[in-house]
Amino acid sequence: MSERHDVTEGGGGRVPQAARYLTFTDPASGQGFWLRAGTGGGGWGDAAGVWFARFHPSDPGRTFGLHRALDVADLPLGAGRAEGSVAGAGHEAAWSLRWEPGDAGVPLLPPGLAGRRHAPALPGATVSDAHVRGRITVDGETLELAAARGQEGRVTGSRVPDGWAWAHCASFEGERASIDLLVARLRRGPLASPDVTVASILWDGRAIRLRKVVRRRDWSLGVWRVDLSGRRYRLSGRVEAPARAIVRARLATPGGAGRFVHVTAIASARLALFERRAGGFEEVALFESRGATQAEWAGRTPAPQVEREVVEATGAGVHPEEV
Image 1 (tube, rainbow, N blue to C red):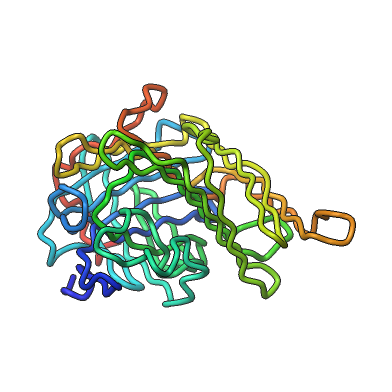
Image 2: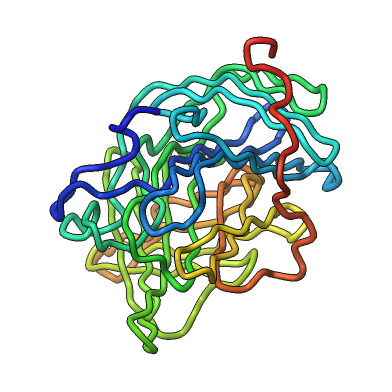
């Protein structure tokens, strides 16, 4: 991974990039996948390495996560491609994936904040609706991917939030759309900020961005009640996933406290979009996704109901060229 992957240009100068990520759901098998390549930069204290998780929709025993330490130059995830392998805890995975560069969508963070050195370290799309193709082999099962929908993104910034939730989906029943959701709570000294929630919606040729600030948290592990409105549009509904569909990973921070990130790529969503008309808000679209939404919930403490956590890999597994 070259230097251009390790930094990004912003209003505050060159900002260390903490990670790239790719998460997607295979429509044929219903399985979901999460890849994270950490550079050790930004606000995180992790050494460079790769995280891998597989989420199985019908057999929770086949859901697992692995982490493998790597040199930054060997990170197996870059713009439009991912190749790598991990093995450990009785599991083995290898992947060789490609997707086309595309639209980053409507930015979740305001232009004046995104990319700045002291911006919050949060997910941001570089390819909002990635159509992933290639091959992935997990525990002897090979999947040939033609157009698995997901997202390529990166995490920049140096301020690690107290907690956050994030969700993305571009696989809806009967509607062509791409929706990103993000809520975060920052801390300045002993004081915690209100929750800031933003939504990005690409639908019917429209690019819609909604935002709200509240002190009452409307999300917890596996459940996110969404309700945002602006002068013209309102988005209401929920994103949810059972604990058996979630894997927990601990990401280090320089202070040592770390954050526990609970991820899945087989969540479900039901979101209604309303448009303001003469008589008030009127529903104009219903976005439903069953098991094809990628999501994460993060905070300072681990969720005890999530039984599966990322463990350290003991080897590289099968070489990607052998997949």
